[in-house]
Image 1 (cartoon, rainbow, N blue to C red):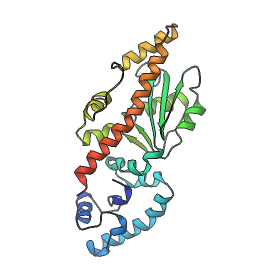
Image 2 (spheres, rainbow, N blue to C red; image 1 turned 180 degrees about the horizontal axis):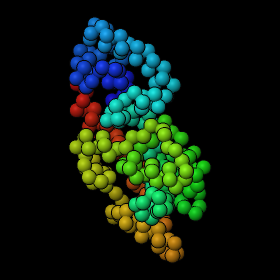
Image 3 (cartoon, rainbow, N blue to C red; image 1 turned 180 degrees about the vertical axis):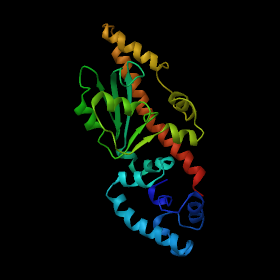
Image 4 (cartoon, one colour; image 1 turned 90 degrees about the vertical axis):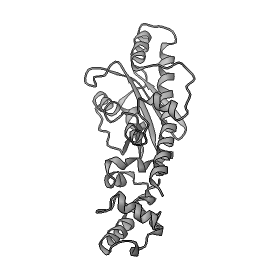
Length: 243
């Protein structure tokens, strides 16, 4: 679903009214006719479209992030997919005030970059790579974002799509790796867990050969696979919602 299919950002328009508009032929803003609804709603829709169209043309994702209900943020994805930044972190534990970020992988536009603690994992590099119209994570609202904000004194306020929630809506439940299997992703290496990530970093600190490379590979695979999960999830939601 693209943003120009959406009417729910309009005051007074809910899912039922939106579906009625779709079924009446107004699948996009371009196809909307005032006769399809009451005069007050029609005026609001026309006013919204007049404001929203240039915002969409200019790539103003923050405008739509503010207008959409939180449960509908996934509708940002198709319009900003090519510029979205997928990211995933590894840490030494679960407490963002005491534990450390060991590596972060960013995937955007087909390019993948990993920053590593003690090397290039700096505040400036993290901030630069997070400069995107849409950030995409899995469980990042509760984990990745607070960790990065605390560890690097950042305020991450870009539109953020946490895939865990649209996945649940699409009946894709469990952790990221469980969902990957359900949507047809097969990993090249044996499954690793968060505990394995901590172990690998501790081994790297002790100088064990190959431990850092394994950790980075694991982190990169998590991040890159998120894009396929996002694609499949949005496809499922489109099939359910669009007439």
